[in-house]
Length: 282
Image (cartoon, rainbow, N blue to C red; front, side, top):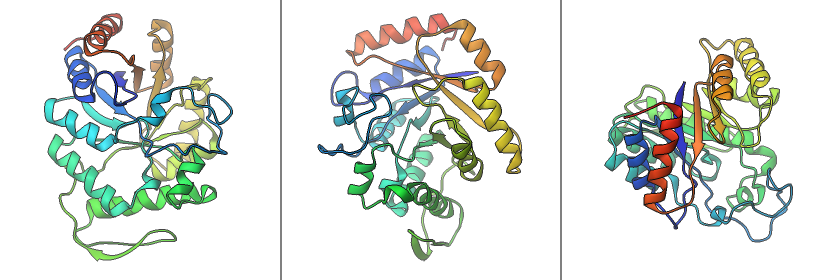
């Protein structure tokens, strides 16, 4: 089982580049950052953790652009994977986002994966012209359109929400397929979407019954004719050896730990302690 780090980026505390250098040096495998383009002041959407319009952390108002953050990381690291937990491709035009992600994969030597979400903040989606009732379809079309641009010499796409004629777009990603990971509650509906459109699952921060949900995911995966097994990225709290061993047995491929919103020295010390508890090293 691999180990990763997620930084809830903001304009305070340690920079993504400094945090990723420390994480890579401590032996972690992947570095994740979130995305919110903005937070509407007046919202009807309830946050999944609070159950109402209040936010559990003011960093939701202050998140850095994920692709700029990951680009700064790519420039100062050599090994650690670059990912999002999660990005919101439905809020971007797929032609421009495909160019951004392909450029990052090209310049980083093929280290990018794409964690995506449907978007709990339906008011945020609406500001981008996305009908919340259609967000799953919009996300699917945006991913399909980007994959066409990443793979086809002359790419085109015709859908309900995305349409463009034959076009050239380089660079292509170094990877033959950018891995897509769905961050969503572990339900049969979500897993059916995942089996059709993605390559793995990122658990939600409050997910319970992970073992049973992985079994459900594997069943749905097979029923949709997918070969192999999906990636499972589990968001963890404190390192619990028994839980980690149980997760590995159940099929978790990577456990991901958050880091404090602190100074550079404090975060480096935290990562060193965490790596020691996990028994990993550079």
